[in-house]
Each structure stands twice: as structure tokens, then as C-alpha cells.
Image (cartoon, rainbow, N blue to C red; front, side, top):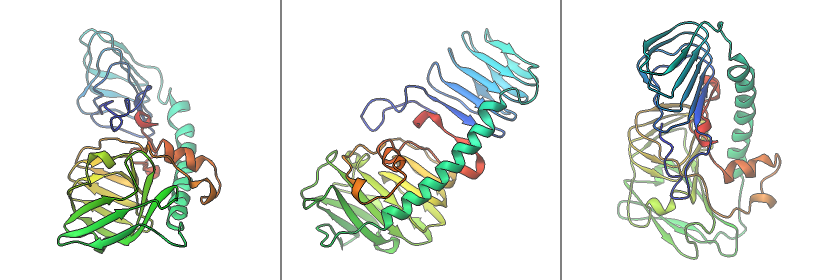
Length: 299
């Protein structure tokens, strides 16, 4: 996990780290001062850097410490201390207050709100929609226009995407507003290459809302945030934005770029009001509620 650029707008987090309710295998954070809480055991080889603190509810094995690092565990700690501070034998579940009930409550709330948000975005409509999608020679071309609205809106089926995706930005420019793309389909294999105006400049301007998908396999790069709270996601390439999923099999990197467009959903998206905040800081990496995992590096 790297605390890198938030799509070119500052860093991802000022309080980076991760919180996992259950067990974890190897975990490395590439920035000083990050925190890592695990409710169960930590196994595999994990490098603890200067200023980092690992709080492990059970046993920690394969730890590679360094000067200025701290590792605390309810059970035993094994590995190479290398000048780090090891504190063990604190009692199984000593950090349960931060890794069990709090995590479960947050996950339950996030799951409900994000599913409702996906359904609400799918329900958006305009009497006359100025944005259109047409079939190009290799795939979909999105003509993004606001036409006096606060956001651009598309409703498509995954079968329309084709081998390439391109955008024509009509009266829309990156950072001015958000493009909401509702994508139908339950089992989706994403094979669309980004071309032309569909590039990194749109990372913080698009929300891909997979409102009914149960399985998505991303085989090509995606620019923009992915909202798929009902889906099991797998990726074999970089995803250039926030990822929200029911579960996430991560085989490629996620480069966060939280939504940075001016949003006008207040009049069309019902309560809870926290939805607007979630979109504006769309900062959840793999919101896998059933795994009871919260990534605070993007909170």
C-alpha cells in the first residue's frame, strides 16, 4: 500500500493505514507513520518501516522490523527485530475494541448506504438528456454534455462497450462536474481499451455504477471510480480510481483518484445525506463488508 497522489489532487490520506477484523498475510506500507490493526493473526513476511505501528490481536510471524518501528501483539512475535520495539503477550484480542465491533458496525452501515447509493444513481434521469453514446468502429464513444445540468448521465449495457472506449467532451470539462455511467449486466468481462479523450484526466470525473452486476472481471485499464456493491470483482490491470465492491480479488494495482467533480445530486438523490459525502470523498478501496475489512488509507 502506497500513500500516493490522489489523482493529482494531494495525497490519498493524511492518516494512512489499514484495519482488518480477521487474519492477514503479508502487508507492507510504503510510507512512514502509517498504522496497521489486525484483529487476528499476522503471517507471512511483513516489513515494518520507521514510524510505523503494527497492532496484532493474536500472533505475528515473519515480521521484519527496523529502528523506529513498533509491533504489538496479543500473542507471540517472531521475525527479525532489527532495532524495532516488540511488545508481545498482551492477551488475545487486546485490540478488539478497534478491530471487531467498530469494524462490523462501520461495514454494515457502508454496505447498506453504498447499495442504496448505487440504486439511487441508477434511478437518475433527465427529461431531455444531452449526453449520448454511439457505436464507433471499435467500441463506445461517449458524448458527454451537461446542457445546464449538474452532471452528465449515461445508461448503457455492458455489451455496448466494445474493444475501445472514447469520450467527446462537449460542454463538459474534467473537474467541472461528474459523469455518471450506469452499466447494466450481471456477469461482465471488461475488455475495453481507453483511447483518445478517455485518459487519466477523467480519473476523478467518472463514476461507473454497476448497479446489478454480480461478477466483473477487469482485463483492461479503467479510468474513474467503480461502484459495484453487489459484485465480486477481479482485476488483472490497473484501476485508476476508487473501487467499491462486495468482494475484491486484487491482481493489479489500484491508483486512487477520488471523485473531484462539482456534484449537484442534492435534489435528485434522497437521504441519507451521507451519500453526498461518500461520493465527494469516494474513498473506499474494496469495501468488502463480508470480509469486515476497512481500508482507512482512503477514508
